[in-house]
Image 1 (cartoon, one colour):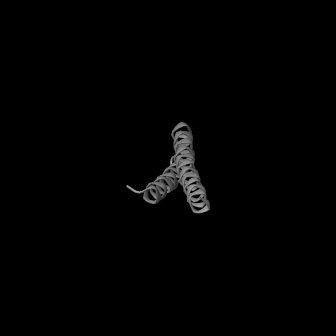
Image 2 (image 1 turned 135 degrees about the horizontal axis):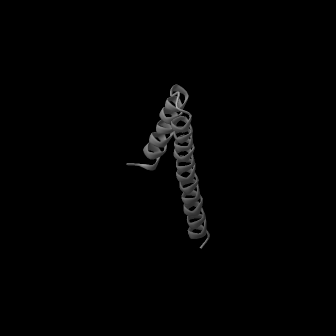
Image 3 (image 1 turned 90 degrees about the vertical axis):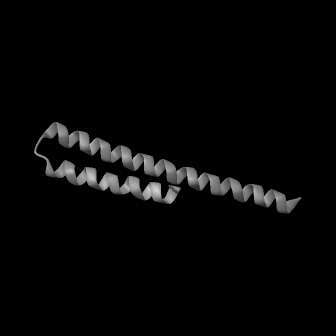
Length: 68
């Protein structure tokens, strides 16, 4: 699975967990689902940052190679 697909998957899972959290009357289950949604979003954000850093590193290496 590519990173973009993984990020999209994690965000969709977060949305599902949030919908379920709003739909349940059990406060404990609702809070657990809300926490799960936050965890999914955090993971998606971490993957996005990781991808961005990799692109920046690749550009730096490319620029160094061109300079020499």
